Length: 127
Image (cartoon, rainbow, N blue to C red):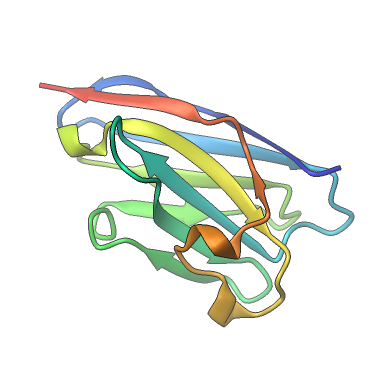
């Protein structure tokens, strides 16, 4: 059974940085597609970063692409999101997700492309 556990969230000031981590278990050889989503109160969940692990193809939402990086170690049993220059609009619950489709074109920022979800880690950015 696939399990995803996020960590690294917290409260930071505007302009600060955070490194989110996701520990994945239940895979024999890692998930082909992993991503980060976030959900602010009263808003829909949105994809912010994805990584097709077989080819290291990444997608970052316009809102974070100039100040963030998504990565995974060689073992593909974890996922990281480094976010810098944080803004109040980055506030929300951040979820790690994993998908099983072995096609880079189906590993982007849509929730329907993912099969498993973590419980989330809260990020709060304040001025």
